Length: 594
Image 1 (cartoon, one colour):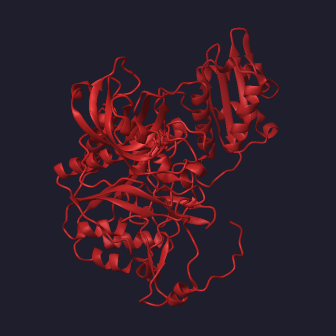
Image 2 (cartoon, rainbow, N blue to C red; image 1 turned 180 degrees about the horizontal axis):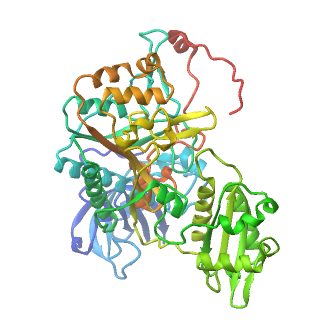
């Protein structure tokens, strides 16, 4: 027979008990984490969100409570009345280890089936099982800690931006479809037959309209939905800090975000230095092969194409060759070099060319192509010392107006940095990337498309290149990077309707198409739009990095799998035919492979 809670009131969280609470009477509530029956004594570890407290049931002191404790099993929900006592021998492994509670009364509020996995930080259950029983997975202390950290991150963001004069304003979840890159998630309207709402990929247009509305400084912790391919750091629905300012200099936006990140990082004991470093996009690609470079280690890229020119036809490569110097890797075995070559090919390299520099000399299979003197000049040019390994690579695929060798070499750099333990995990290296290209070439559409979104501002001296040389146009966009991870991106926006019209034309949109997609926004631009700009940061990604996790799913309460499934609620699911008929929707047989 289960007990009722009645008027019983918890006086303490289990994890908050300390030596100062000794000799006090308490009421604790939570889940049975572990039970140990020693006959006369029964010990249970009682767990709530604050931690664990040890409860003692002594048959000699209270036979009734002891008898009831014999019924307890893992994950039973109980309330315990008792007195806090100092332990004879403290347990330093838990925060409450100096005390225990001598139970005087036990209330069994609910029982539990045996869980499919132990409620511990380290579990052997698969991620699929953990997500199917997410309500149990979330009881684990590590996930509890992650969710609490996420709460505190959002709380610090709100406090900081309120202090800087920002208004938190909600924007609609049901809007019109205005394709911004990924596929829209559509919601059929029952009232307006045959028409659809779209869930927002971002509040982009609405936050710009808020600037037109004179709100001056806006922010929002908002849900965004993008129907795109998944990976560890991407979800169908995600949360972002969205921010916009009127009459800003780029520096004003940077300052606001740096203040936010400074406050947020203190939550994990990290002190960051403001202002953050800046780097031009082209410089980042040239030096690190990435627009989100990890600055926690060096090993910069060096172009070595001229040294490989004599062997271009023999090695069958196109484009440029980039190299990195891996310190101490000259001792790598043939197996390690083969594994490196396989990684390089998976990263898009035609091949990887390794040169060992030792005290005895320089050795490489390239000697037959470049000659001993050529290898010597290569080693001197890249500054390789005895014990170093020179790793060079060319890209397999070439892209118009782009040096694909940089991206390939950038991935090799990160791989080597990890394998050689060169990355200083204690560092928190923030970086602003600026000077992005306004357009990028789409191989699928065979045309220039917006690199960010069609409202990104254009560097003034490049506006006249929109029609003649779009690949040379620079945007007023910027990204914030932390330890090789893009936290978010933003830009100063286009606020003039004449420039916006030229941008649409450069993207191949006719006046009719632009009006159909963005008509209400284009109308708004004609009513005195102030200069404005903003940024959006991924809350999930920030929480993931600060929590030291590798997957977004470990900092989101109810995440989707890599196949966009919610295993706990079994979503998506089929719906009744009556619902489909009401909406006028017919399901066609699937004809393409997923």
